[in-house]
Image (tube, rainbow, N blue to C red; front, side):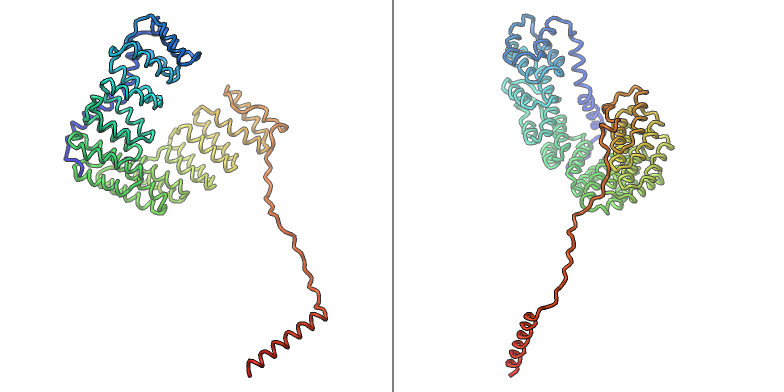
Length: 489
């Protein structure tokens, strides 16, 4: 057991603080810096023009910055970075920040230094991020908890999870405490990429600092082992949750169900339905009702395994259990039906979804129409397109771009022209050219039956044996007969 029993109030408080810190702080910082000084101020305008101009190299940039005669402040540096982050290359931003550090010295505040590190991490310039982290430590500055969270996530995504863990162990050098927030940050970053074993090591060494947030830690570890598709370890985490008094919720069981289905998809496709239904029965013993996400996890794996009959059974089971299918459920079943060339049943599934009043996203029709065109069933794709237009979803341009060239290559230029005129009447700009509507331009694909190379049969007429060959055969038989008699004697 990893933890002792924690209090729900402390966990709720921590989650609320972390949600605010993770989702609201970057936007708050940018809004604050934008409101602090408008872009029309001469100092800000001059620096932004120098940094964002594409003319000249980095040395030319520094020469132009040396000519700046305004009052340089720490907040002004942050504002320039904020305004130019999407306009200027990161190398020019790094040179500007280095120039500002040289001119401001310790007047550059730690929060602005941390903001620069976060910006380079979000822009995926890991070299600049490493340089500034090193300088932050050399100058004895303080690293924010938010900054460490961003840096740890980027390092793990880069495959440098050892560096993220090493930075956590040496946070004291950056005057950043090893508390529940930083420990949770590194555990979350490691588990997001499947490094659950390393994350458990952090949890074991910092139990006292993680009291009160046990359910969140267990969720992260369960997700980490699920990313590795290690069903045994994921089941162990669920058992430890129960023994610690943290009852698994819907998220935990859905995570475990995904782990189990992904493993069975690769090793035991026949066990997809029975084992997944057993997990759903276990969920009900804890008064947790499987939702559409639970069933969609199973349907997704069944579709990838081309289990058509089982997919339809799960959809029926979903309806009987009182869980209403969403458009993703219908999409997963229709997709596997179309791929297995059961077009009539696939159309019925789509009609049933429309009758239920479900309005799918555009991906639903885009993918299914693409599949039908891929299996050379353009007529069914046109019927599905009519269903899409009946729902008045809009954004039909990508569908026209797929259907018109497909019809032209199939020789149906009349229908292609009809679709082209229809798109033009709706003022839809197409990426395909109107020239392909001409048979002189578009080469029509004519399927030809593959003829294998067959070698001509040569009729060999056996000639009657000559007199010499008869005599030689008679002599051989005599010799064999004499040898046989000697052996008898």
